[in-house]
Length: 158
Image (cartoon, rainbow, N blue to C red):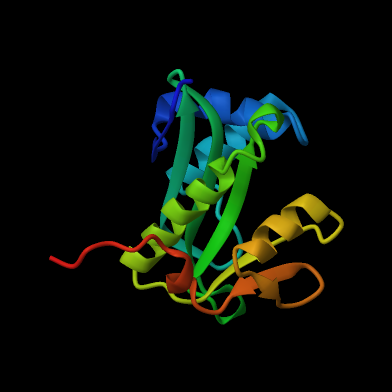
């Protein structure tokens, strides 16, 4: 069985990531522009700040999932999870959880404690995933982690 490799997104990954997002909603063209604009700082969610980051999961050197996040001031948070997507045939294997841990680690490295995510509460699969990872309701459309440090991978101190 081939293992999954996790790393920061590179520009050459964006077309595959657009296909991953378009499999759930929208078109590849829409997502290619949106993802590229996000990385370039052209597409800026409300109250978003720089820096921002995207991580991908690769199997056989091909992206099968990704996560993106940035710093923010939205809802008194310091960080926001922007997107998380895994191809349907790779869901349920822990890939989204590992991507989430990578982003949580990035938030902690950037001194972020409070993190939010806009979430379609009708997406039961996503809400359950986020809740299992410690997210709590903030309002009708948003979930929050009051302390993302509790969900970041443990690292050995130098």
